[in-house]
Amino acid sequence: MLAGTRNRWAVRSFIILLAAMLSFGVPQIVAPSEAQAYSWSRTLKEGTSGADVRELQIRVAGWAADSASRTHVAVDGQFGPGTKAAVTRFQRAYGLSADGVAGPNTHNALNALEASDGSTKNFNFSEFHSKDGSQFNGGKVGASTVKENVRRMMYKLEAIRKKAGDRAITVNSGFRSINHNSNVGGASNSQHMYGIAADIVVSGRTVSQTISYAQTSGFSGIIRYSTFTHVDNRAEYSYGSSGYYWAI
View (cartoon, rainbow, N blue to C red):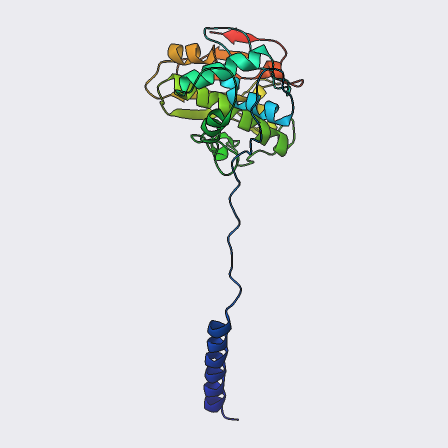
């Protein structure tokens, strides 16, 4: 068979095949679905317990106090007085009925802060990646643990942003790999290497103002620098620097 004849036959065969596909349909390529918002299945109130209470505590952790206080919301899955008080503050801040009971309206407000990839409305995981390109790898805990620690940090930073009048927050430094922490002269047990610390700047707000927001947001580590504020959750983790440290 001549080359020209073969080419014409190939074109004709393709046209026949294409017509058949259009007639009978072809399987559609479906993009992976985005992660869904957290599924709250019940009203949560003082005395309840479970995994959903633990998730609630993570999301209201930035509403730990009304005034500067060395306290934080325990993330233990037990809905006690501290959780109720934090829920009440969250509700008040978001214009909800402030009764300390997490029902459908509160669930909706909490889910409005959640992004499809598990991060939060105003923060991306990439903002917290180690600056040496290792993302969440190479720290003192595994990458999945770092990512979850960062997720918890994000909800506290959402609270600071709300208290600051919805001012944008820049994360100068989030997670650091051990190597990167050494290169920048970080402390030998820097909380950054666990993903439980962030150095932040709140747009249009002073360092002193940022510190005042952090003091009511459940941070056990707060350190003043000339152009930014360090915040961390050291007291909430067994591998963190135990206790509170506020150098403000």
